[in-house]
Image 1 (tube, helix red, strand yellow):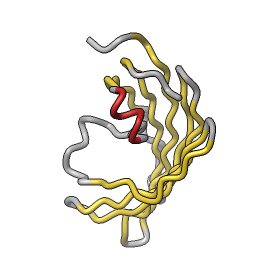
Image 2 (spheres, helix red, strand yellow):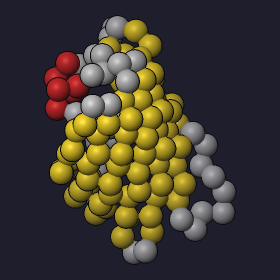
Image 3 (cartoon, helix red, strand yellow):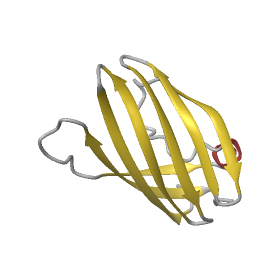
Image 4 (cartoon, helix red, strand yellow):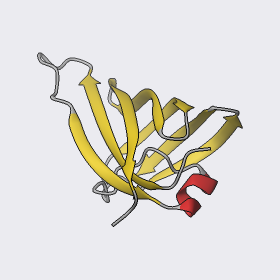
Length: 116
């Protein structure tokens, strides 16, 4: 199980049809015990417009997969797979953004200390 605390995430995104790669984004997130228990490992706390919901979560030792349905400003669906450690995680997935567009996301994260 992942440890609660402050986690630093690096997210890389590639969008179909983009002529260049988007630079990686890094953000920190305080992951509570409640987040760990419900499997909320990857959401970006700055993203409040997407209104995404996790569905069909499957947990195996050291792994989790789930579907995402977003009903915000833009309707999107996706699937994600992650490998989890107590102080690190990695994985990613693909979001179908509608209109023939898709976005690949790769995440890596590490626990950097206690929440402040």
